[in-house]
Amino acid sequence: MRAFAACFRKDLKRWLRDRAALAAWVGVPVFVGLLLALVFGRGEARPQGLLLVADQDQTLVSRFVAQAFSQGELGRIFAVQPVALEEGERRIRGGEGSALLVIPEGFSQRFLRGEPQALELYTNPSQAILPEIARETTEILAEAGWYFQQALGEELRAVASAGAWPGDAAIAKLAVRASRLAAEGQALLDAPPIRIEERQAERQRTVSVTEAMAPGVVFMALLFLAFGLSGDLWEEKSAGTLRRIAASPVRMEWFLASKTLAAMLLTGVVSSAGLALGQWLGGGAFRGVMASAVWAALCGGALFLMMALFQTACRTERQGRTLANAAALLLMMAGGAMFPFEMMPAWMARLGRMTPNGWALQEMRWILAGNDEFIFWKSAAILVFAGLMFAAVSVRLRKGFAS
Image (cartoon, rainbow, N blue to C red; front, side, top):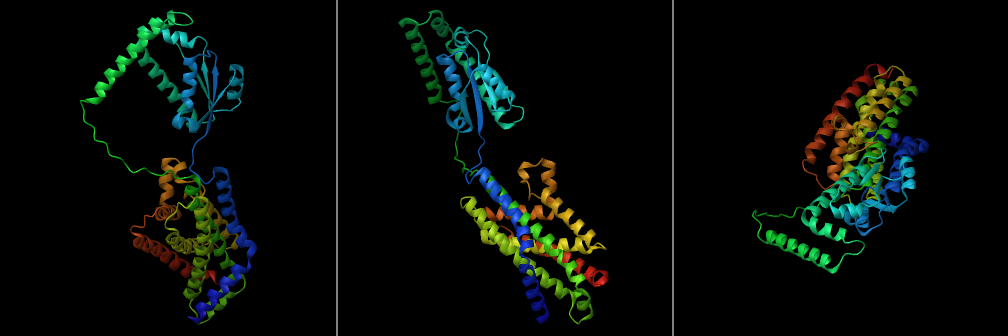
């Protein structure tokens, strides 16, 4: 145990003394996290789009169509800006704005007379979600206009044929017809033929981009640390430490266990700081922060041993560092550290969740959401994986790598 404690203290002192390397391993994920927080903010992620409206009709009906995009939830998604037709076409071709809605001249008169009319919508091909929302909203407005014409077509045509200002009789007839339709509709609503039982579902809180990315940033830091700390085995080999341990009564397993524990402690501290930063940037949305820090420490030890296996599997230091670096980058990209699984194609997300760090990342997100069910068995699974890596690295250290 004295040898174990001595190796543990030695590794911690050496790693903490190398401040430049620690700053590089931890600084990149922290910089990425802060950049995401600055870009997306601490609130809920909400798409923002610009809808350009070229209203060539300039009537009450055309203004109603344009204002439909600024009401309710649509008003929080789109900023509606009136423009001239030429300016709108130029800006939408230049990629400025999500869509351009053109209301042609004479639209209201054709609508009131029941004649065919059209709304022109030009979308930005460089965007996917917001132009589709604008298109579906325009289709809904067209459907609503058609039903409105079917219900009040005769009265609308009478108003349109009256000239610039309809007479009192036409207005009264339209008002009476609308009142009767409202009364008939109310009667249907008061005595519905189908009984509907409504249950209020619990509203799910929208997760901000910062919250979605914070666990991935933590695991990015874990992989950087695992790669960097595992490379210390080559320095121990160059200094002759491994040869002296192999010739001494101290078992190589104690030496590797002390390094693993030191790596777990260091990754646990870094993860705690990263989760605390994510808690602040996310507005205090995380619940199981302490449990997640312990989980991250366990995962950090397992990832350190996995990277150590990649390092010791090669004959030269250059080969070992190249292999471990490639594996770390691949695991970052596929395992949800660089991009959340929700942003990946379905097949890639399934593969990413099957990687060791991808599975552990998914479990950390459950823990942060307050879902710590089966945490004991999941921790046991991490320990089993770490034990397999530990056994493989120990064999490699005893047979060939130390010499």
